[in-house]
Image (cartoon, rainbow, N blue to C red):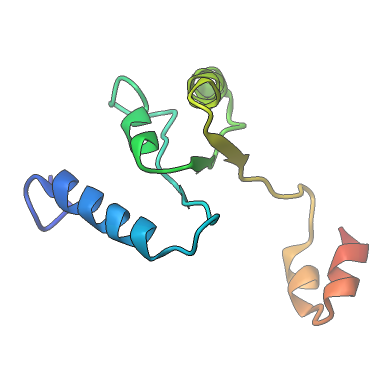
Length: 110
């Protein structure tokens, strides 16, 4: 089943990323959600790091994703790329947290 409207969208995606890079002020980095530890792609989409300075990784702490994520991280770091891990605190009463309007109160809660 296809989710993307265009066949061979990879070239258009790369063109868009390159255009974005050209618009960035000097010294700014381009980070994306390019790597996937649990995927049918053999290399976890490491090719995205040809145009990205790094990637953030979601769901990396799940047991089934941990070993493939560590391999991806190693490969990315060897290329000199940035890796950012998505994370969230556990055991948080989300309803209570959402009621807090002051950022300082949220920090204190966490």
